[in-house]
Amino acid sequence: MQGSMDRRSFLAAGAGLAAASLTEGLPQSARGPEIFVPAGDPVMVASHNALPHALPKAYAALVAGADPVDAAVLGAEVVENDPTDHSVGYGGLPNELGEVELDASVMDGTTGLCGAVASLRRIRNPAAVARLVMRHTKHAMLVGEGALAFAKAQGFKEEDLLTPEAREIWMYWKRSHSEKDFWLSPAAEEIPAHVKRWFGITGTVHFSARTKDGRLGACTSTSGMAFKLAGRVGDSPIIGAGLFTDETGSAGSTGRGESNIAVCGAHTIVEAMRQGKHPTDACLVAARRVADGTRAAWLKKPDGRPDLDIIFYAVDREGRFGGASLWEGNRYAVADASGARLLDAAFVIAKKG
Ligand code: ASP
Image (tube, rainbow, N blue to C red; front, side):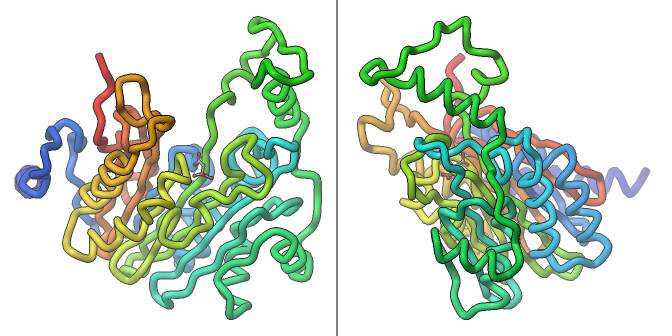
C-alpha cells in the first residue's frame, strides 16, 4: 500500500514536471493523462497495428534476451506476413501500377549502424533485408533492382505480393479515383465495405525496443502510400525520418512520409530526448514542427489546418516512452512489465467538436 502511494506521488510529481516543460501553448489535455515511469524492464513502443500479435511476440523475445534490433524485426515480420494488414509486406496495397513496393529500415543504437531498403519488389520481408544491409555490407541503403538482387543473393524467396484482396482494393481505386479516364466508376453502393475501409488509409509498422540494460534498436516497415507513383519512397526507410536510434533514444513514425522527411522527424525526437525531454514531449516537438511546416495550400483543409497526420513513437535509454501525433485521436502500442496495450497519443491539434 505504501509502495503504491509512493508511486502515485511520484507520478503526480512527474506530471508537474512534464507540464512545466510544455510551455509552448499546448493544453495539458493534449499531452495525455499519464506520465510513465521507467521500471528498469525491457520496453517496446510500436504503432497500433503491432497489436494484437506482433508486439507480444517481439516483446517476449526481448525479455528472453534478444538483441533489440532482432526483436523489432521479429515484430515487423509478423505484420509483413499478415495478408490482412494492407499497409505492410505481403498483402500491402500496391503502387498505381499494381506493383507492391516495400520500404524498411533498422538502426542499432549501440553500434550506430543502420540499414535500409526502398522500392523493394517481390520480397515479403524487407525489414530482414534491411537488417542484412546493416550487418553484411558497408552500405546503409539499397533500392529497387539492386535491393532485390541483394535479397535474392541472401536467399530470400521472390513471390507475388499482391493478394487477391489487395488487387480488389486497387481495382476499385483505379475505377473510381478519377472521372477523367476510361474506367467506368463503380456506384458507391457497389463498393464492398472491406474495400472502402482501405480507401485513403495507409500505414506502416514501427517498433522501438529498449533492453533491460538500456540498449536500443528499432525497425520500420511499410508498403508506403497506397497507389503511390511507381518508385516513390516515403519516410520509413529514410534514417533520421521514419526511424532513428542512438545510445540515448529511439524513435519512429507512421503517417504522411513526405511531411516527415521534410522535418527529419525521428532524428528531431532523439535529439530532443538527448537534451532531456521526455519521449512524449520529444514526439510533440516533431509533431508541432510538421504542423508548422505545413504551409502549402494543397496540404491544408479549408479552415487552414493541416490535412494530414503523422504519429511519432519514442523510447529513451531509461525506458521512458511516449507517442504523439498532429491530430487528436490516435493511439500507439506499448509493451512493458504491465503487458502489451494501446495508449492515447499526445497531440498538437484538437479535433473540432
Ligand atoms: N509513412 C508511410 C509512408 O509515407 C505511410 C504511412 O505510414 O501511412 O510511406
